[in-house]
Picture (tube, rainbow, N blue to C red):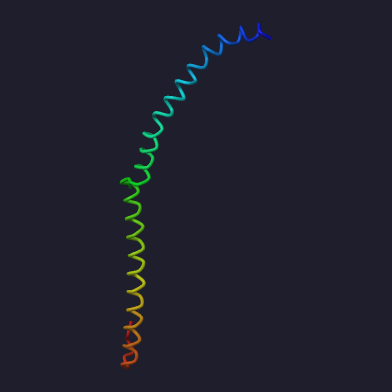
Length: 88
């Protein structure tokens, strides 16, 4: 048993410093990566802004078209009530 420990201990001593160094590097860079992710989540890219603006404009155009249609129907009703036959 002692012989196995004598053989594996040097191997572990060679492997562990790399693992420890890699873990330390990950721990050190974690706040930077997390901060970058927060900035990415909190800001809007130009592509997202364009997409959102396009969606907003399409909704506005749909609302405007609906309002125009309602106004046109109201105009025709009033025209017919006034006694005109050609209310288009």
